[in-house]
Amino acid sequence: MIRRPPIPPPIVEQPSQISRIPVLDRAAVGQPVTRRGISLFPVYLPGNRLPDIATGTDAGLQIEELPNSAVPHLRIGNPTKKPIFLPEGVQLIGGLQDRAPNISVLVAPESELDLPVSCLERGRWGSRTGFRHGDAFAPRRTRRTKNAQVSLAVQRNGSRRSDQARVWHTIDQELKDRRIVAPTSAIRAVEESLRYDAGRVRVVDELLEKGPLPEQCGIAVTHGWRVVAVDIFGDRSLLSAHWQGLVRSYLSERPTADGRPSPTRTLGLINRLNLVSATQNPGLGMGVEMHVTDRLMTAQALVLGDSLVHASALMPIR
Image 1 (cartoon, one colour):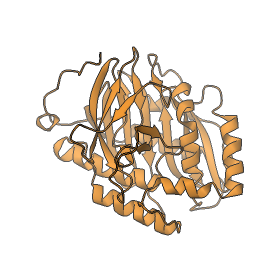
Image 2 (tube, one colour):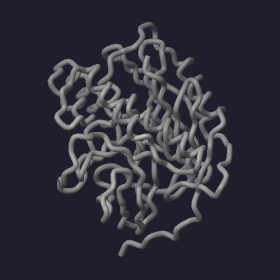
Image 3 (cartoon, helix red, strand yellow):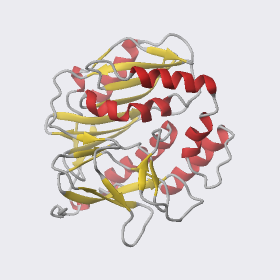
Image 4 (cartoon, rainbow, N blue to C red):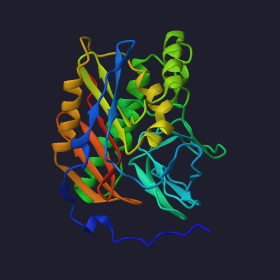
């Protein structure tokens, strides 16, 4: 029996707190793997301690449309005995439309909640059987647009809604730039089209076979000298479950800069994420959300106690 957790007071009545994302001051980076002008730095987070958390396609999370179906929400349920983690950025393929979570969420055992989401296509409003995780995370530009609008909404009124029109516009621009014709304007068409790029397929297959390094819990992505994204998880098992989605997404981009990838510059970006002030709100499930938007990055984090569950930082498209 899935129980619904007690409904908290409306967040809009609670002033957001300004805080900093914990434990990132412990982060370290290793030597990068560079393929096709894109470098993936391993990120380590020593001393971060989390309880046993399930995530990924085999975690047992139930995802369904609401009884009165609506674009901006899905119902998710955890019938298991351990928390289940769902990161922002993952594509949820199926239902009436493809969606992506607006926030990272940690669903308590034997509970369900209504998850704020953004639509990743607009030419379809028709049922498919259930939802599945997409092979790739949503592209960086789509995630950044979504997360920036969610951050503004949290600061403004405590909601977690994105600006759906902006998300759709970003998807249209992404498809146009890549010269992809998608009948339902679905961003999943990016990954589907790249299956015909033999060089990219070889690189992705190589990195998927390697997997994360021992103790690695995140990746920082650079184009030449330019740091473009960071995804850090609380431990290696969480990263491993989403390794394929991240690798496929980040290796779908065209490099926007050349030059030598710099561990110092990469760690400096992570340190900036640690030092910048974040808007803090109670998590939708377990933990606390943190949102950051400044001139260099749009970032989110989910924290449980003094430990990090997930943090993402996405830089502008150049």
